[in-house]
Amino acid sequence: MGASILQCIRDDSGSYRKLKELSWIQKLKTEVPNGLNTKSTSEILWQHYRQ
Image 1 (cartoon, one colour):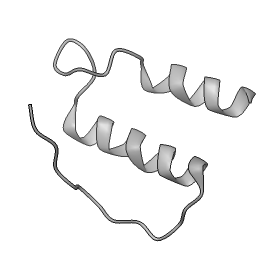
Image 2 (cartoon, helix red, strand yellow; image 1 turned 180 degrees about the horizontal axis):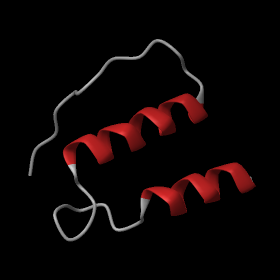
Image 3 (cartoon, rainbow, N blue to C red; image 1 turned 60 degrees about the horizontal axis):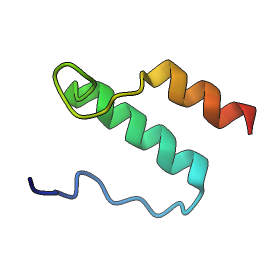
Image 4 (tube, helix red, strand yellow; image 1 turned 90 degrees about the vertical axis):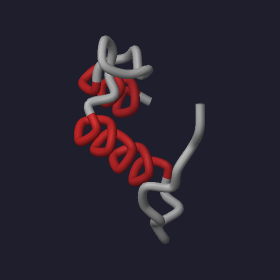
């Protein structure tokens, strides 16, 4: 397994970073069963906004 930098962002806001991460998960279709992300995008967003 390897890692690659997909995008550099200057905003250090945690919420902005999470939104960018979710957009890459959708673009690259890395949710289960095609990838390793086991939580759905909507579930992650809901958890983030409840905090």
